[in-house]
Length: 288
Image 1 (cartoon, rainbow, N blue to C red):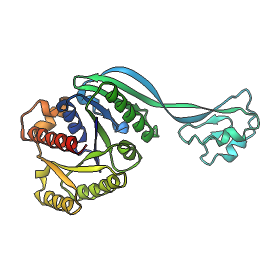
Image 2: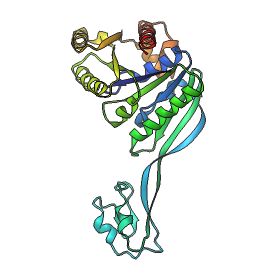
Image 3: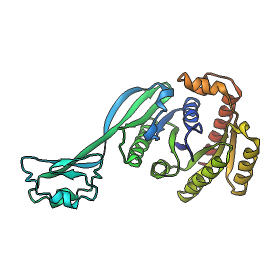
């Protein structure tokens, strides 16, 4: 079983389009949408939900008003000003639990906070594990771990050869959770100064986590100047570049229509994605 994470330093580089295309091209694949703050891989794969589980991110206080004597002790110790005269402001509350420890009447208890749901769905191309956080909910790194591990379990139980992970942008906690236990990552960048800067940050993270990175430049023909700069910089850093995908409006039209880009067009962009997948499959199979 091969785990491939698709990540980038910024949003909008084309990770989800590539993940959906790889799902369609890979034999016996399981998909994992680890961009849980803005999950959209399901928009292209038309999943049918088969399992739904609540995601508990932490605990929040609940006050038994029958026992509360409004002594104000909880209000004194709450540095977030999240509790007052027995009422809890859940938006301010950080779930630290100090109020429950200092309450002399033991009127405050910490209860599970459901922050969203995660799903196992069937698609035409294999199982998909994805999630939906409630607006403003936190602990997305924890949910990423749940999604990734469930996808790995499904791959093992079904003898799937691939786990294709659509990762979150940036280099924060959700990306670290995505890369945990993954040996190889496809880093998608764009030919610009900000693209080069963000690429460097993500590659630093890959090296720290001992993940083998491969770089793909999407929309490379928008700036041949920065494309050459990125290629030269990757060569200096001893990082392998596998593909250059041209700017292609037909790929964009496929995504807008909710289709897997590589299956609805024989355009230059689609052919470049097919070639990129072939290189990845060959390298990861040989290198293990």
